[in-house]
Length: 441
Ligand code: URA
Image 1: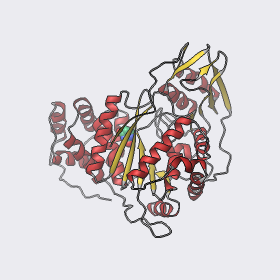
Image 2: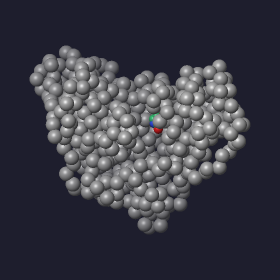
Image 3: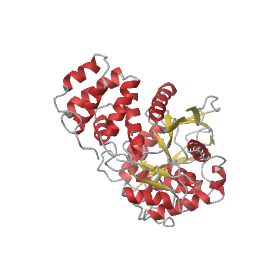
Image 4: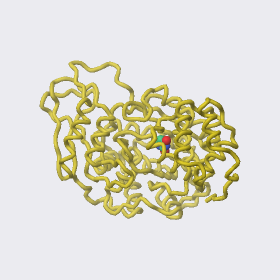
């Protein structure tokens, strides 16, 4: 951990720094390093940083500023090094990682990490918890009885060499400036800024020390980026930051106008992931898992792998079972089931032309699958199970989705969230978005 202040507290003045960005100016590297260091040490007050964030959100930062802001956040904490990882046979293991900007029903990390490990890569997935309408990977895995999210760096390294894949909580030592800044942005309306999102994500990924990184940048109602143009700009910014730091980085733009798969919740998403690892599961989850695995392996220099085959023949499932057991989880244990359920039915005959990701995410959250404040406890069994996806023909009175919760008083608010979620038309729409929209590398 680097605790040495890089600057005397009085080198710059926070009000002057805010004024530069308010007036559309450019911050120097020295000013940025001072700002991040002073904020991490509590010299810049929360309200001053909030004002600076808002000025950055409104007026942007250029590429040099974003790179310096990212580097300063990395320097605020420790960095990990997976460079010397060797497997049981003594061969060096390339590291490769995936990061999603967050979406509804996005359980891809669960089948993906063990799948990629099948081919000899080390996959260190340092993950987070959900806040708001997007679910968190750790919340999902904690639905598995006994599974433990917190590992020491030594335990993580050992699991990577023995199993090849680990999904665990990011330690507090990585980019602590981002941790503080993200919490502030979350409550000051300053999350949706491309420079701030790019530097937040990439500071953690570069500090984590992966050799290759595939970014899954979500686009659509259930994502931070609502338009393809904004998602492309975010992806290009992050790819440039990664490459400049020596990380082989590629981004995919993928659709988040509708949930991924047929589940949004914790235990139900684990079950769907296990279905994919057993060679089944919804086709969109399988398609994205296989595509991301191919990209991760290619970026790590592993040629000729066939991830689709490893899902079908049980190799990925074997690694999953070992990965869960290594963290105290019982891969054979029954998953928690919500105590109450309520079915929503199709009002008319026709084709389901839209099923809004944001509405489903908010409904799952309100049912108890997510949290409104960091200290809230999530319900493992809560969520939304979908019975139809855009493009499917439905008949009046057929089940469209099932709402799941332990606390039935939550049904009303969940139904409210879903009031405009579904569109049924006589004919299918020709312009439904593709799952994989673009690749930036
Ligand atoms: N995820 C992050 O880690 N940071 C952001 O700013 C947005 C999403």
